[in-house]
Length: 187
Image (cartoon, rainbow, N blue to C red):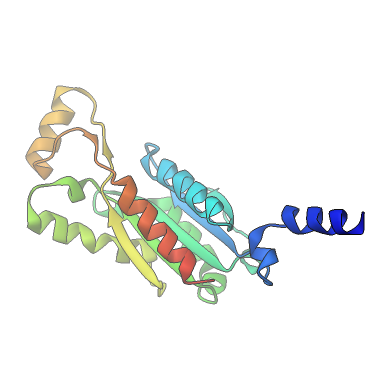
């Protein structure tokens, strides 16, 4: 009977604990205006949960967070007019001292990444630095977003400014690979 109880306890403990360590905790903070970045943050949470991490997501509308319980903080923002979401900038400013003591990674979501123009994509790659807002992230990247302009004028502007077409340009395989690589940084 004792061996059955022991076997049950061993099988019911998450694998991170069974390997001798506490489950690693990650916080994903995001700023999203139209929902694309929020959806990416949600998928990242799912990918990391499947890899045995404990993950919380937080919209940047919250002004503070208790970072002491997290091993990694991922910060993501959509880019609007060449700038990160204003709530991300405010969140980092309010929490700069605590965030500077944590392992941080950042990502930006930008429509220019779906442009066929290499110069525009190169410009977009710098936007992850703007999301970092002076922090020193372990890793940073930029993903293409979901381009859903409204009306014929929005479509025209999208084509004219970025040479892009409307649609979902997010590369979920790339997002998953980047996200899981972050988990490896804290194992």
